[in-house]
Structure formats: structure tokens, C-alpha cells
Amino acid sequence: MSRWLKVLVIMEVLVCFGPAAALLLLGVVVAPMQVYFLVTGPREAVPGALYVIGSVIAGLVGLGVMTYVLRRLFTGTPINRPIVVVAATLAALAPLSFYVMFADTVGYRIMAALPFAAAAHILYLSRRLFATSKVVTGEP
Image (cartoon, rainbow, N blue to C red; front, top):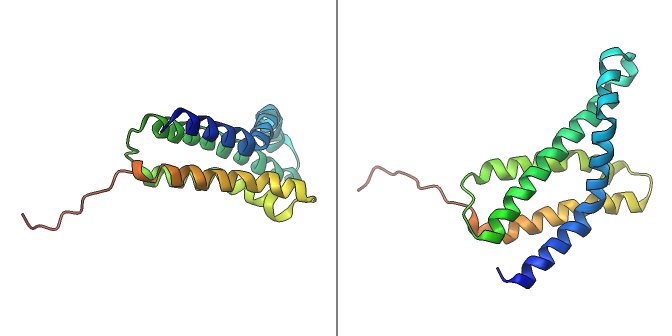
């Protein structure tokens, strides 16, 4: 991958994942309070606390997977476990689907939809790096 393409991919990541990263930072800040509400709060607070904690965990998984895939994409080394990468990507994007479907404003919906498009594009760019498994047929 050429230097300019790397710069463009980094710009895409910053633009598309920037607002979601801000939400992740906010979630990391309030996660300890949500754990406290989960343990000591009333039953009405439990679903919201679980959603925030799960969203933070999913966001951190997504950050790790995105870093891994981008590192592999920029160096050109193969991705040995593509099923794990795709499953972690889907798990990381799952909490954002709530914002896409139920956000109050169009801006929030666009902000939540951008990571879906960027993740699909990055996975598409790295499609040749996914290691193929060899099927053993029993024939020599």
C-alpha cells in the first residue's frame, strides 16, 4: 500500500470513527459509576447500566480489532484468524445499531452509521490478507 493510500485510510478512520471514539471516551469515564449503579441501584437502573458497560467493552474490542486490522493492512501481513476478526467487528458495531435506529436527530444517526461504512471499507481493503483455510479431502 502506498504512502498516500495509507494517509487517506487514516483520514477515513479519523473522520468516521472520531465521534464514536468520543462516545467511547465518555463511556469509559462513566463506566465506574454504572458499575456502582448496577450493584447498589434500583432495578430500573440495571438495563441502562448494562448497556453502558457492554457498549464500553464492545468499543474497546472494536478499537483493538481496528488497530490489529490496520496494522496488518499497512504492513501487508496476512490475518490468520479472519472469523475472529469479523466476529469482533460485528460485536463492536452492535451497540451503535441502537443509535442508528433510535436516535433523536439525523446527526446522531449519521454519526452512528459512519463506523459501519468505514469498518466495511477497511475489511474490504484487507480482503486479500485473510488467510484461507485448506480443506483436507483425503486425496493425495
